[in-house]
Image (cartoon, rainbow, N blue to C red; front, side, top):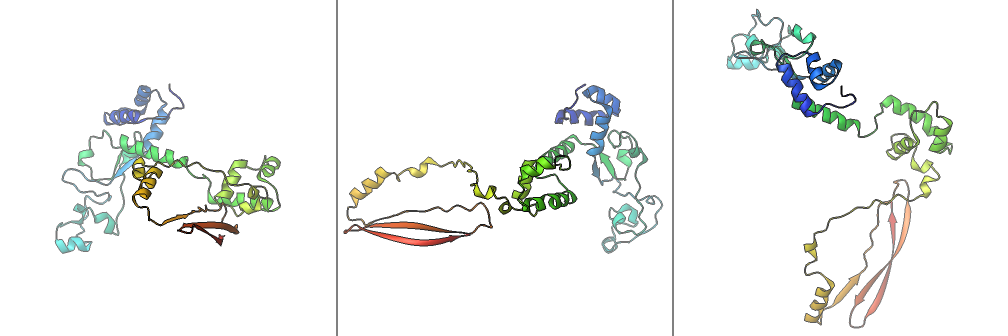
Length: 295
């Protein structure tokens, strides 16, 4: 028996095929090498609900649909005179005040789905179907959501904030908090830093004396540059252009790139010297001093 292994798309296709052939959970589990409870959970967790009717029957899940004499309940059917009786209309369940939903009693016991049901072609109730593609998409979505973000509820975040933030404001580091409260704290030191960086708790990076002294880690960003943009723009092309136009006036400027500061709270005044060099006939150097405020 293959334990601790997730079901793949081929396994789910086999489950659907065997359900269509009216196979039991035990037979399906034996064919896949799984436990019958695993198959039961798989089917019940990935049910697909379909509000469709049958051949010559519209969807109607009302328990009184067989003998209901009501007509022209909604204005749409009353205007078009399409149906004489409302039980033949798919909008009947939405507008009727006496609607009582009926569920097929066979769906309350294994296999919990309409796959392989012989009366499916003449049933107007809501269908519960196990579809392999639908189940696998739901599985992939749940797997992706479970690995992103912080899996904490609002109550857990509030309890962590009430416990951690006052200690941090008392100049205790996350490492000291985890070391002294290992029995009562359910998060790691790294998780505390992530909560602070994401501003999920009220404590901020400015409350960490050591962290604000460190520069943010540099993240290497590899930019893909199209080499065709350099055609005709090299320094050799520039010298050739000067030989072709000797009387051309040349202007050279230095460019400064100011990156965003790691914290929004910090306000810094950055003083930079920008030297603009203008090459004229007299070859003068003009320094320009600017004071740039970055917030």
